[in-house]
Image 1: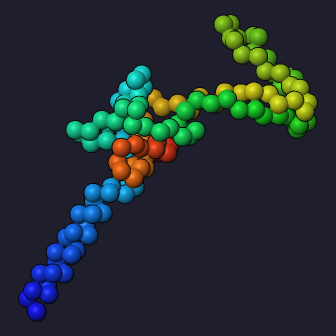
Image 2: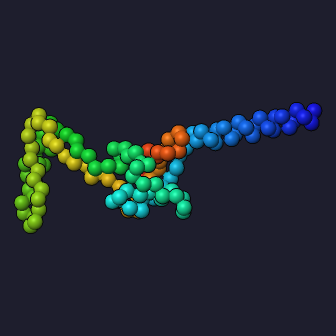
Length: 133
């Protein structure tokens, strides 16, 4: 019976080592310490660089298109002017059934806390989103 228990313990140990060696995906938290070049600190001794990171749309600046087909929005836009603000470079216009391009400034900044998924093998990390604290 003693040999059987040792065999089970050895099999469990081998199985755990095999799982750990394959480094399955894991959720990891980090903090942005630099944006140019991008660096995210995961642990006190581990810093990820841009080559190890895959960014999602949630953590990048991106351009998209929207259209205004609502009369209430049309009236707001028609009566709104940035011309009265000195140094303003903004212009807001309304065109029916036209897709207007806007930029969403959602890029990471120093100090952002992020949630990531460590990809299988542990070499790359997908930055999913910011952590709201």
